[in-house]
Length: 319
Image (cartoon, rainbow, N blue to C red; front, side, top):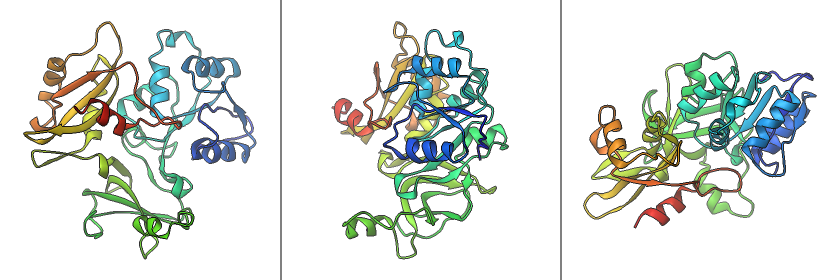
């Protein structure tokens, strides 16, 4: 998929105790005889770009929030990243606009999106380096060899037709045997046919490529309408004042849940206001998908592996 050789130098700022660094990074790189460049003991966007420049790295790994932080450094344009050709963005949903900037501004023409989870060792689907830009930025690729994927109705388990949104399931040699000494928990996610139920909402396209549209547990039900935060986040990433955005549902007496957009502004001195967000969304999103609440933040609460803690956003700002 990445076509590493002994000539490649891979900048690896992701943690080694996570599958991203341990399997997709360490094992994949060393098995091809490539060089691993570790930019520092913890993630610092400036240190990553400095390492790429100094070591002439050809590949860069990261979760979306890492790439966003790198792209939005005030002196980003001062770094020479011309040696980059590829890399992997994974760990959480990869916004289309961020992917396009990575390709255009970081020279990562062959960057790949990987989808998976620790329970699937971890990758189930991946974009190919020869995929066109639309497939590489708008999907999580297609199933790897010897891996099966399907989309099912979360309530009935019935396989859905292509183009319909449902729960993504995967089966194959990479799926775990189970959670250690937790048979009941294992039975909740692996069915009798050995299909792993991921908890992710996805669409299988006619070309076999998968689009992840959100998490089942993150879905917002506003006034009886199902709203997928991922769709709104993707759209708001195109707003000129927004560097990063997370959308969550918060309690509301009238509608049951209301839509809250938590944003990190490109310019802290000129953050977006709710009226600007509303006007921006009105022409492109259905009225019930438009955020009615806004929080401007300096940073998002994160897990140690670089994923945004949406539950903390809901708990902190849902009052």
